[in-house]
Length: 388
Image (cartoon, rainbow, N blue to C red):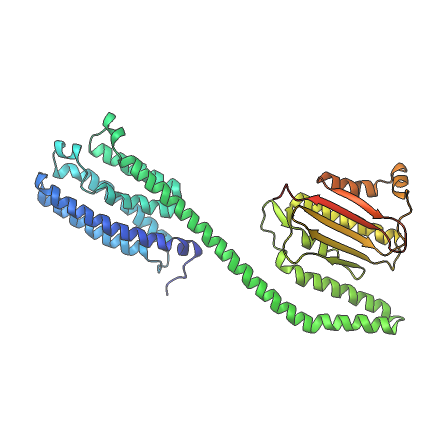
């Protein structure tokens, strides 16, 4: 039973098939060149035998390289490409067996430059641009050596530049095809994961979340010992909702940017409500960590100073030019001048954990209001220009 093709083989399959079509065209050209050049050869019979071998090898290699239904395809293609070079170089040097010096010194070798380029193309597809360039240099060296052109005339001959350029161009194309296939596979996996997450979210919502919500509501209504049970159920409900909503954004694929939303929504709880945009909010990784830590510090101050029943609200806005993060609570607020007093007393929690972090990423942190029944509200503004 044939093995399933891997993504790398799928990506380069069109290139392999196009290369074999080129092989057929160059074979026809080589046969035409043979018909025109045979009268000038000293051994015409041998030249036709070599052309027949060239035609047979072209058919065999074209079939092997254009298919992927082999159990060990990589090894098969490697062997064929190496064989391609052996055949091409052997035919190049065989030109001296069928023609005299005056002919091969001033004309093409028996396998013409176009047909010899097939080995370069195969190397480029299999091994990339470096393999293509190395193959082009190898075959160009064989051609120049056979034709005894190691003099100034070699710099006026197009054989080496053409072969090296073919190897470089097709090698870059094969690498691009592989990267495109990898991105496609990653997108397909992400789509499948998203669909599975949505399916699980529906099932969880219809079952577990509804039960937790019911326990929270009824436990609060009954009161007494069940109030603690209601509180625990509420915490687990919020945690489960965050997990479901952010599961699609948890994967870290590296790179210079990350999505800020999961870092903020992870801090949600029954007393902390987080609202973020529906689309990704990309930002530098260091900046994202600093913003998340500043929000965490502001929420810690709510727990410590606003009382056990206080609620906090975190809002993330992306205006395009800047990010605006608001942390607001419904506690008694902060006494005017209290922050300056705390800093003078050596208590650096706010100045370092909040103001210092936001300032480190070229942002501004402002306490909008400090007293009153509406509690306190921090507003962080971080410019986006450095990530755009």
